[in-house]
Image 1 (spheres, one colour):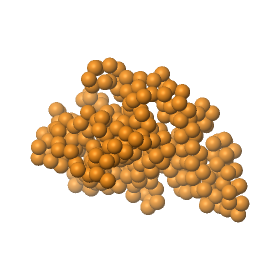
Image 2: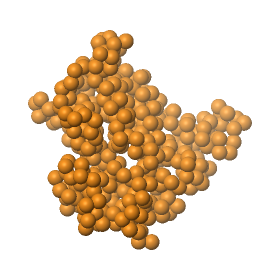
Image 3: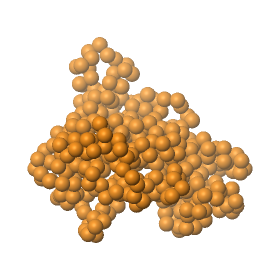
Image 4: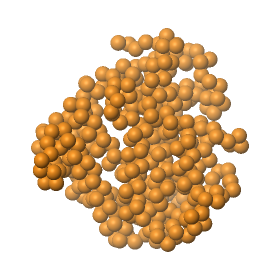
Length: 377
């Protein structure tokens, strides 16, 4: 099937409010259309082949990358977001390649050592514009990656780049009109992101012995329901395998609820094009009120019983301490920063920030040894 046939198929089967490839506003630097791939398929492939995506393999999700072999990394998280996004998009008839692209690119701006590393860089950059991984993801695909001598960045479509501006104001580029929400595909990936990390952090926490699944089944209705369903499906299942099945059951329940609730909202508001969906009174992709309340309880529980636990945070504190010391060292002696970072940064501090953000967990350790930087403890 060539590109034109794929675009025709999109017109026939996608929801009216889904983003169609042929309706894309294009790229900052126009290119000849690919004969086989749609614009969003081309975006997806560029992200997969980027240096930033490969480095996600050695970046922390929750557990420091070198502490164990089975925990999720930032790359496996992105792949799980991709899987949840595709499951949802295929049911709801949204644009799957666009969802895939957003899912694969949404964490390209994450620094080493997860959210703790992000907070550390934000503190270091407090007087120089700050730092968030969402803005940095856009900076990575728009400025820092280099795959073509004619332009910087990956030259992704406007729709993909707009979808990476998470938590920022959405405007219509043609009219300047402020829109309520991002594209449906961006809304979907946003929810797939939280769905995936709730599931896999729960799974990792149980496997590492930090979360008590028996107590969770009592404390959390969402997990209790999943355990009950697992026991009914597999009456002879017990031990760790039961808890893994329960985590999978919870993921399936979450996906089913999103599909059912989003279908109801699409019928209620009946958007006729992508912009209609962005201007609706409420987000069209979401959980039902009852299930959303249980998800909020799960989120709070994970913060209290996993993310802030000393078994996790000791390694994180030591690692982010190294990141802080590296920033100070490079401010004192910026000659260690590759020249290409100075070429794309408005200040020396931003060049340092870009350099450190691109590092993997293990490369921070290498750079710290080479520069004689040691942790405080």
